[in-house]
Image (cartoon, rainbow, N blue to C red; front, side, top):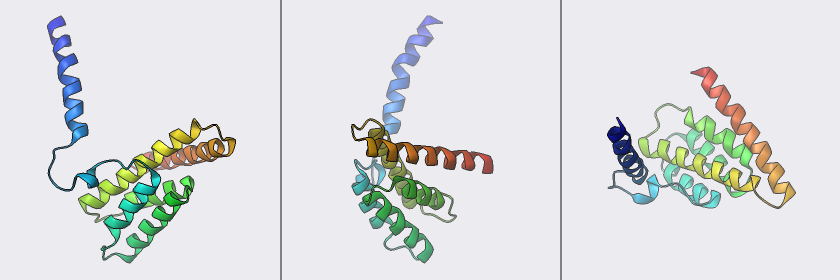
Amino acid sequence: MRRISYLWLGVLPAAVSLLLAGCGGGDSGSSSIPKSSEEAASELEKTFKDTSEPGMKKQANQASQALKNKNYKKAAETLTRMQKQKGLKFQQRMQIRNSRAALEKEIAEGLESSDPKERERARAARRRLQQLNQQQMQNR
């Protein structure tokens, strides 16, 4: 039994690192989480610039602007709306997910900020994100 536990201690971290690294191939920038909300905004614009769906392009632009302006609540709402859309291509779905991850990272950093206004903005965005997540879970 102990031998199995030790085996999992070696296998599990390796499996997690492989999952995080991805399977390679394709555009490496499209599968990585952007380092900042500005980078996420740029990647979101690139991914949706050639979409034939005008409503989706408009939402991508709204999310991008919200990310650039650090309007975290608006970005969370728009990205959540985008996630619910049917007919998204894999790359589009991944970019929405990555943009949301970058947003969550910035919210977490904002919660640690020494600037009280930044902390309050991050708290409000975190509350809104939690509400949106709860709504998504209830709708499933």
